[in-house]
Image 1 (tube, rainbow, N blue to C red):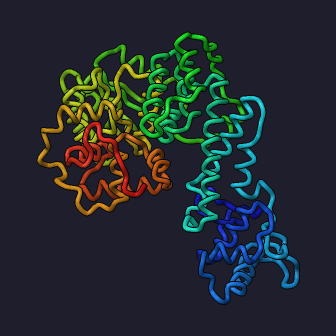
Image 2 (cartoon, helix red, strand yellow; image 1 turned 120 degrees about the horizontal axis):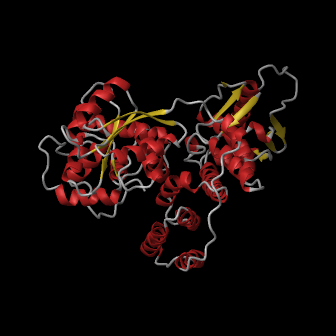
Image 3 (cartoon, rainbow, N blue to C red; image 1 turned 135 degrees about the vertical axis):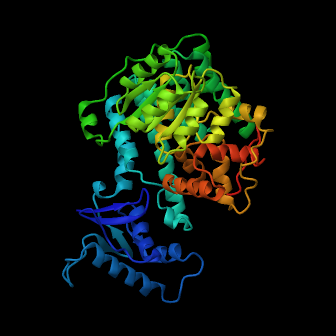
Length: 490
């Protein structure tokens, strides 16, 4: 079966094997016909849009040559005089003939616009978002038609994210949605629906204070960026929350069996928990037992036990209390992280102002979390760390830096010289606590490219963990507590 992908690297496939589509401009011809959605594109339009302002003298014959070679690639078994069935002549130009199921962008749009009950909408949006492999049509970004279409598809993607979340709330899945909605509202703070969904999800979990705080954050951003108060809809939501007029949330509903069966079969994340308080360990164990895809492989009561348990079980992530008897969490973290191919370490703390926490970040842990945090925040931290991100609450981080940044470590990177502007932009966002996905959304970069850039930053500065980048950004003075960050590439 012939298929086309534009939600990420542009490519045509035959039975799952990539086809040779030729050079950049020849590929652009096929991409432009795909964007037309099956409608004919006149040859003159193709010429004007492929060579804006300066078409070559032989542009017409060049386009004809591109089409001929593309036809051979798409239909290698077609006889010489047989009519093309895929890239067809449609005077005064050409058109791409394909079914909706053959083109990921066409299928995506149909799914986003589909209707039904919350269960159907959830499944449709989940499938639609699963089609994305990176920014749409990115390799043709300098051409206006591609940039316009990419912007349209990105808006549809954001709508799909929000429709999925709305359906999830109707199905009683607020717990699993809060972390993603926090990221969505942070990445797109001017979207009213992002804040409405986040506040509604928090309220549905009984976290009225957090829900109202989210709306206050939205109000602050809108006043700073737009000079406007909240929309009438968000103001009504705020008033309803204060008056407790909102309906009780729907009961938690399990995902349909067919969706679970369709999910990829991945190995569970293996977690070790070390804390000297039995109550804390029991709470974390119950939380992990209830979460699919995460398993607790052992628990320890002090730093020495934690080190031995990590060596024995080889976990993916270690949740480590920073204050423990015999050997505290900071010393244990340093020893665990000094081993070859260590697991990710997340520090647990009762207070967000512990001086040892600052030292732990400098040592290379993958962030920290308050023991009073909600279960979804613990799970988000574990998944972020295992994926190579660091879940670092920016408000606590900046308070730590403000208190302890004067004590600069002589071994820390003395300067950020030699970094390109694009690397500096990524470093600023890392220092703000954003994940690779959020950074990619903010800078319009594929998540994979962000990961590569983060790795290059670590190598350039002689560091080994993302959290150390946060320390380097603050200690060098590149980012300061309370700074309103700007980006050179925006």
